[in-house]
Length: 572
Image 1 (cartoon, rainbow, N blue to C red):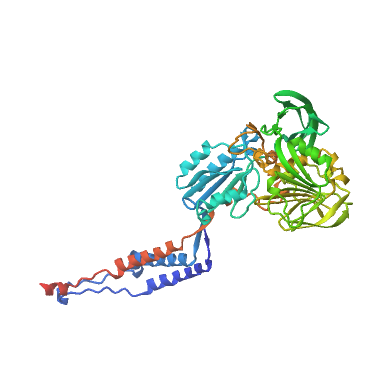
Image 2 (image 1 turned 90 degrees about the vertical axis):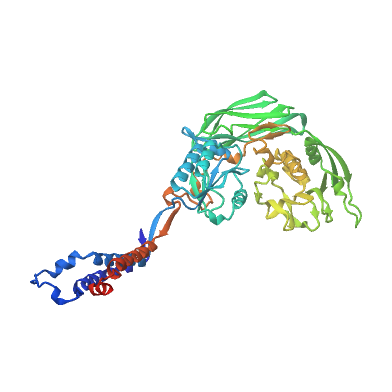
């Protein structure tokens, strides 16, 4: 208990004055009789005045108690304690794939679930809501006063293999429950800190564990041999000690590759091999670690689709061959642009490729610009010689998946002025080398160097980049990078019809919370003793005590009725 106005206790000195007035005041007893001669004469008996006062000390005690209650109320006392039976609590429990990792004998989700139940039983909130945080957040328990139902739902809940929840989706789900101010506290139980920090308490779970993961796997046709495929895999050691395992590749359920690997701590090993033509590929890792879900990865070679492609400007053998690897192209070549005032009929084609040309403004279509300008979106200024390494601007964009930065290095690049809606993805010599734009019925991808003067077309990253470009530009269902990750429709990695579904590689970063001090997250974990601690004002109890003691004084000492024998005789 604390007091906001501790100076009020100085009034306790008034107790001395109250006691002095009590003992010094005159106490004469009045007796009313009908005649003096009726009283029998008695001898006066000497007695102590103090003995009389002490035998009637009840009034003094009431006055001192009223003074104490008044001082207590003036001191503004606050009771510091955790909320018991009050307030609203929102529990956000991470149910993404990484929560299935094992720390000793229990999984991280089991530890988070036990911690959440412990907090509910200790805090006893008046209202509670429980949300499972995953790529598609799930409302486990809507806002309710039934704590037992919330605990039961948590005990029955299980983690998923989805990726982490987008912070915007979590906040939208919370706002759907009503005014955020109704939640006294929002608890987030996870093995990594949340993106948002406002009114959020992070309760971390998990410790440093060994984990060897397959974080990349793809198959690409070889340009020089259509009947052969190049297979590429990346195995990462995401722990603090070296790990060894056996790496196996299956093509249409036939084992085609096996190798023992040893990976150093916090490093990756890339494995390349070749295979005969096949459709389904599985990479498997046989290793003893804490997280088995990322030890297998799937790849489905998409069937080639017929595409109508309009080609404007100069032809390029390497780009044409790369497009033919992943589709059955039907090219229509135009070496000269339509006359002034005539628009390019982009809506009649699946894709428009422009190589070394200047294009007028068009509001729709799918455009692949190679060293070309596009009115109002991409304006070429001059040529620049590149003497600095290429750097990423947005490395996580699906266009750049599995593309190596060093392979993009050009000799010369076009210095361009981009519209504000065009996003640069990679820059060379401070000029945009790769840029993308998407709005409504239009998608545009820009490459700012000549393919004839670039070694990019001879690198393994070039066919990968072309396939990524087709996926992004054409937005084919099941081909985008996001759709290949586990979701509600595909609850586990594997093959689903014409799509291969994998675990998000970010879920393999099991030891992120251990190294959270070096991350960009400003939020730090809080101890359980700091949660839901409030200051409850209790001064009104002192005020009510003053009122009660004064009322007792009025009833028993001041307002007590007196009786007169004369008055009673007159009535007779």
